[in-house]
Image (cartoon, rainbow, N blue to C red; front, top):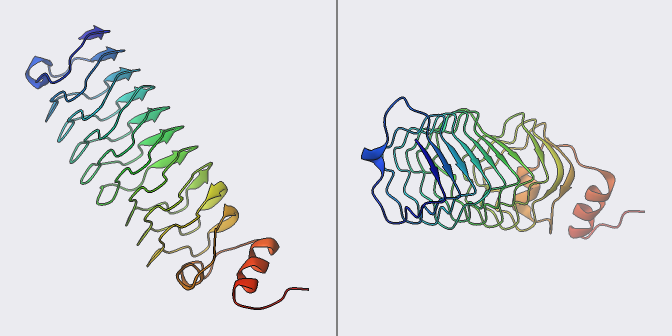
Length: 223
């Protein structure tokens, strides 16, 4: 099924999709569209409007999303194994219960996105804005995080063991019970240091400038 430029907003589409067929949507308006439980493995979504699109319980293994996007897309309990999102606006998207093993997000706007309670062995983030996102409990163990904005994000309980941060921001991030053992934080803006961050960053590597800021915040002078 190939669909180009159609207005599919508010439509129920699941029963129109043939299982086992590759589906391609180009520049379609899927605002509020119902794709609950749809068979969309390997599907492509190119520059589509996804405001409030319902992908709950959909099979999106290997699906590719490029450009487009919208506010409040729902991926709750969907299968997104090996799915790829590139330059997509995923602001306030919800991924609770979604299988995200080896999914990738590149250049995505993910402000306020909720990834907490997602399933799987981890996903990759590159050059994404996760400001105010809820990423609590997710694993980034051993991952390279490049160009990520975690400003004001909830990172509670995240596993950053041996992760490498490059050109990242953690300003105002909540890090309660997060683990940074063996992490390389030298490429991150840690923001204003507080007791929660000091505890969470135990076992991580920081640079001299970061160390001086942490000490000065505790009332110590570095000479």
